[in-house]
Image 1: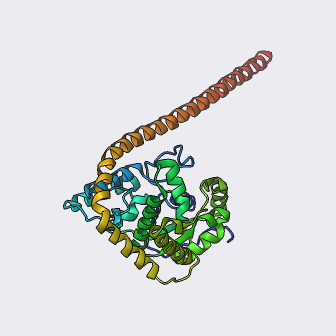
Image 2: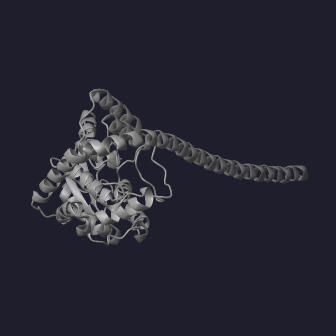
Length: 358
């Protein structure tokens, strides 16, 4: 796909780009690609860290809000049954807070970009927010092998593979189910890193419109951002070794990969996996979800504090850099002013000499 300025779209005045999918599955890379191609990141972006050196490209305040909302429903982001939890009785209050947060992060931006994997299992709430704000929605869902995701979660969170694969199933099923009636695109993450242009062309075809501002300059910035370094965990391993969890994940993965190729796969595999997950919740949900929710409360408070500290530190660094640049400019201007004054004095001296000679 050659880089080209995107033609003017006939879409509504404001369109939200929503990146859904599992944690550690390429949502950050896809979000920054969209940002480089014209979508607008939130005001307070979660800073990079040791687990994602290139950045998360998501609003840390909305991520913390989502953690709190999940805890209110007795669940958490790492609960395989989070997407099946009932809404709390005060959901209207949560909706109001979510709208205020969204406006604080995006204002009246024409193409807000909302990326937080937790939105996948809270899509009902966030779709209400976007609708209330009068936004059309375009959804993009990266597809990464569940064992690669499991490898990343094992490194970061020490999760066992079976739990990670169940989480992957839960998030991908939630993302797919929440976006069926919306323009959406599935994007193969590994193929995106190999050559993003064909993948973006396929995504544009699935969405039915081009990305908002995919100029040649944007293409060069995307080239610089996407690299093999983002593929930290290969997708080797045998899903079948994980029993039913692996079998269900394999069916979902095959469906998603077919969708990413632009095909219309049979949804039977999704239905079977969703039924299996609901059955697991009936058997084990009361043993898993409350424990996850209790742990999440403390983790959310820590994430909030860390997010605030990192954001303030980042802004302090930017202010210091701006101050240093301003001081350098002032010094250069001062030097030029002194040079100008010396030139004026020299010219005045020559003029006095000429007048004296007369």
